Length: 414
Image (tube, rainbow, N blue to C red; front, top):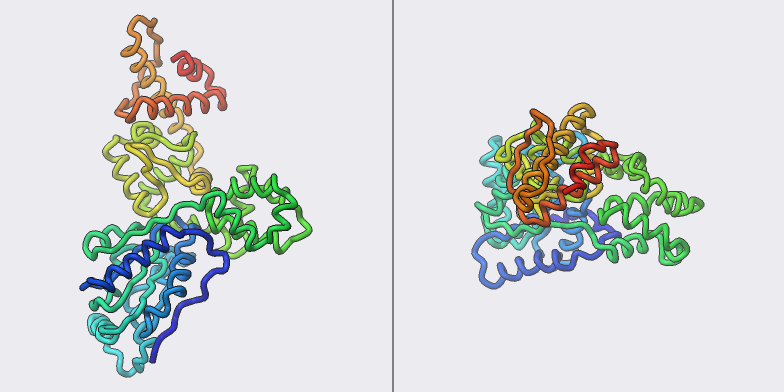
């Protein structure tokens, strides 16, 4: 019995040439001189199209796995918040491999041993989709180099990379051209050409997230009488943007999809995640983030690394962190208002003290400004001067916007 368990690939899959090439290169390298099982771990935030990529690649390389393909959704991040246990996953594989129920061993260790025996020396692809973490995946790894394993997860699978030499493939947002291609495949070039300004806005507000783009395309297809400009107006307004990306089912509701990552976080990490959503600007330094969340820098960096492991935050340069625009908007909606206000007050105080300290170093002849008593902030290394300036300008703009005029005047003076 040859299992053919791959679900259908998405017709909306677009781009990702570099990532596809990396998956193929790993397989080619193993075919030439590999002695261990090939494992590729596709990571990225919810809605980036990890499963789309895995299935697109798998279907295009079916001929290289003549002994079959196994597939399982491990439910690592889903509405149930109940990841699939190993015994359930391996029982499904044994069924697919033709093992009768009466022949399945009672003990999990024996079931796993039987599974590995059955796939040994067979050229098979095993897709472990939507994994919670490395611990969930490790028991399901085959022991024979003839097999290839493709894992998708919001977790970066650091243990698989470290202990099992997995090939990490991290997905980023689609660029503007790829986003337009995705919309065109669904809506047709003619409809896009009829409202070019609206299409530009849709692409901008979806920020390269394939799930967001596919939801917009679905809404436009189901209501062809509604101008794309109306959809663009919904996305333009931050108060309605997330609700506009909702097609009524959990998997087609961006807010729900992001909530599965949020609900999986421990309380401390969840608090920092929501606070980071309040930060003005496209990114934030470690020092600024520490003041925003009210933690020492060494604790803050530990939490940021944990959030980065599950693809909610990205460290894009030394000591600077960013979030995808839609992830940041979701985080902001979950923040406690009172705690957020206290955090932003700390951030403004941090900027004032940091700017004042820098001013005294650069121009000691400047008249000092009397800062508030008791408002000393932790002033750390924000990286380069340009990065430090980005923090100050960002916070000064925020202070003007919320009418914190005294703080804004101090910052603009520097």
